[in-house]
Image 1 (tube, rainbow over the protein chains, first blue to last red):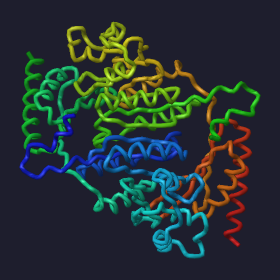
Image 2 (image 1 turned 180 degrees about the horizontal axis):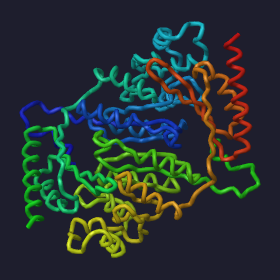
Image 3 (image 1 turned 45 degrees about the vertical axis):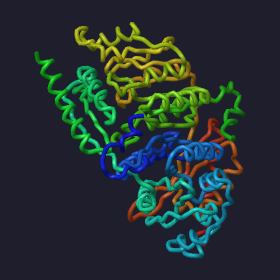
Image 4 (image 1 turned 60 degrees about the vertical axis):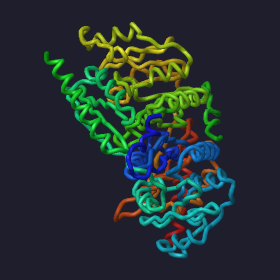
Length: 260
Length: 260
């Protein structure tokens, strides 16, 4: 795949490509009751760190589904980010499912209890709340600056809350610990043309720059019709600039052709 | 799983459980550039038709990834809904990937050309735009009331545009053709309690009603802290009403206990 080779060319040391998947856990997303906001947040986070997000899955609150998805994704990508299912209620089964996926025991973790006690009075730390301190053996905790109940990382799997504000806080805490890659740079160009008018010429530019990923994104608005945005992406800024110039030339040529 | 048995009990004929998956195809979702809106729309659509959405995947514009995901999902669920990648540009590879997944040929389809000609003057129907009429052999077309270029259904896979307004129009066109199930009913209750205070009692109610799916959904707001919504779901409305009463009793008892 062309993107595998993006790191080539420059004089700087070439880091391996770092990849990731997101696993969203929760019946409420699949029923439509809750509209996911975490996928887009993690996608932006990965792009900012030079991590290639390659796959997303959403699964229900069913242990065997979570285990199967975690094991499929962790074998394939550098990082797996999960969201949801780490609260105190009976439908919060993520921590147990992760322990099962890794084949490790799970129990109340004293480090996690200490974090909970920063916010929750000891008298209120009932059995249900202690469920939030159940952490698979061998996991590192992810701090939660919002409400203290921690997430955790085990192997390459990072387990976070589903509540967006808490998920974002956990991502922040996690960032310094992650293997990251060379940043992907991108350029967006308003084409000023319909996709059908530029597609052939744009495809030819993509062929000339196999190392720069080029996409065309139409938007449609009632009364306006289609507008087209072209997006070019590469880890090599100099190469990206050359490709951008080629696309701009192409757009000018197509416009001149259509005006004839 | 308890949900498999939801249809049991009533006098009405019990339809088989109808399931679905969503496959979102597009680099732009994985890079974070575009924030997906289609997953939530399809989730609501499925719930409205009594279809259980069981899984979502997002994959990049890479043929082998699309083929693998389509084949995994279509073997497992009643319906698969795909979004994205059916435009005229080189990065629109969904139709070809679907043909590959089904092992059927793909070519320009005269029915699709006729639809395109409703909007596009014949002189403008260039090679690129004709790509939008490439349809796998044996597929039924899905009308597109917004911009005419059709989607298609082949086997149990329904291939739709990624632009949300067009995707919604295609869902509307698709609805009457779909196998649907008995509707899932749901009740949302503002708990007025923190999750950690109600979790044990709520878990006991779930145990008493294994045929009603019960979830607890916290939201967090700066300055307000956590609020909790409990959601109960069942295909049997009478049973749902009994469960709702039991949850309300539980909430009153927990509040009385805490006030003591």
